[in-house]
Length: 76
Image (cartoon, rainbow, N blue to C red):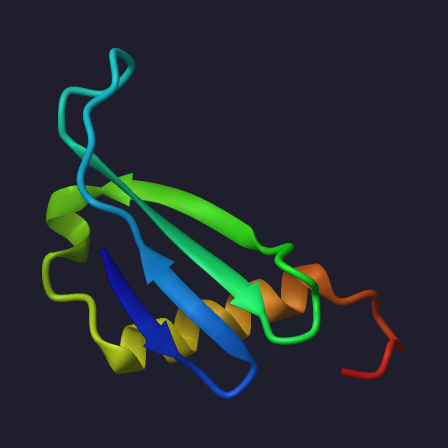
């Protein structure tokens, strides 16, 4: 499991896993904001797509996820 610290929270990658619904192994990328008491947002990807996942990718994922978690007009 890989963990990346970003400006607003933590991005965590799970270990690759298999499911009956997908031919390829999957990996879950989860963003947990600093001030959401453990709540977050996650997305599953094909594991091969995340083989080169790095800090820059974590920052982009966190920014995108943050925009989906926040209600427009709410202070960050």
